[in-house]
Image (cartoon, rainbow, N blue to C red; front, top):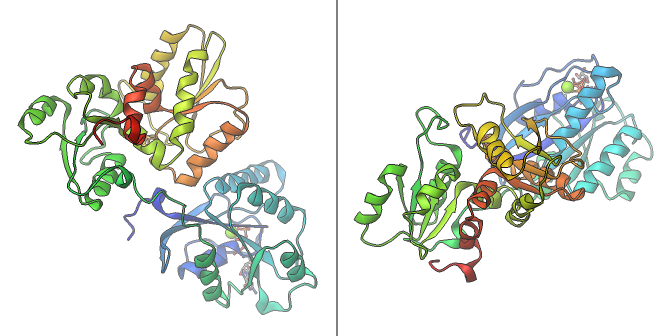
Length: 404
Ligand SMILES: Nc1nc2c(ncn2[C@@H]2O[C@H](COP(=O)(O)OP(=O)(O)OP(=O)(O)O)[C@@H](O)[C@H]2O)c(=O)[nH]1
Ligand code: SF4
Ligand SMILES: [Mg+2]
């Protein structure tokens, strides 16, 4: 169970003021002492993640956060961190103390959650200490906010809360399949997976592994080869593959061997669909032609790693941009540092986002779209630069695709 990557789990975020009982609640939902609890306000500083299984939903990750009312310079940074968690939250729990009403902090939070269309449950905590403050329940009803009264400390109401989570859990928190819609049982998929310096030691990359699983789930067949084996593998196949999937870095050299009547795509295109929005990311790539000296481009990577060799984000993409036009200004963002405001950029080029959950990738696309900043991903960018964008997205536009 613990092997399901975090990025494929429904994300349940726990928010609220300091001392409301957020950490006690995560401990009581999970039945484990994973978060530190204390009566000192501001105990939780960095978000705490706990992967678990909820019957009827499946694998989830529950995230405990710092208080949304924290103050001072460091406190404000913690509030920002808590709000950043909202970008990846599929369902939000807002913990309220039974003796407090909805104050400025909660109202701001509710506004933000509603603007994002995230399902919300108000969790009124500490009911073992007395009654709920007058007017709170009717105010929540008036605002059409679902609520549950609990005592996280005494484990009261937790079953009802889990039930409510199941009831409100969105079923589109992840795309159900990477490829199922374009394959038929027994189709053969040929994957080209170069084991270059970027390949993790002793295993395949996450998108490769997940795509293999998806192909097998669709009752199809998959042949995984390294790039130098391609010509020989094709020659020895009795029937041609229905689809060839390659890493973007070797797209040009792979494409040379794949006749036009065989569908060809890249893992980046698959992930643009699986995690994000293929149409927006393709449209973003087409805006590359508008870049000129002085244009600002943001290259964003979800993980923080040291560049290795011909790193795509640090070497290959900047090389293409410089070739396109001198004087393009390149900025970088990595990990959770993706800026909420990307207004000043002419283009955002994001990594494939395989370690992000779908909600987070869609939030990032949403931040860009809201300010009309085009956004694309690494592989879609590279396909465009190699003049092969139409070809690699064709498998997902059935009328244009010869083979599928
Ligand atoms: N009586 C009672 N006390 C509770 C309950 N839930 C939490 N507490 C107490 O409230 C205090 C704060 O609990 P935490 O779980 O640390 O609160 P938090 O929201 O995580 O606080 P920060 O991490 O500081 O933001 C602790 O002393 C808890 O024991 C409850 O249901 N009933
Ligand atoms: S999330 Fe982005 S940076 Fe991290 S491994 Fe996936 S593609 Fe690479
Ligand atoms: Mg806490």
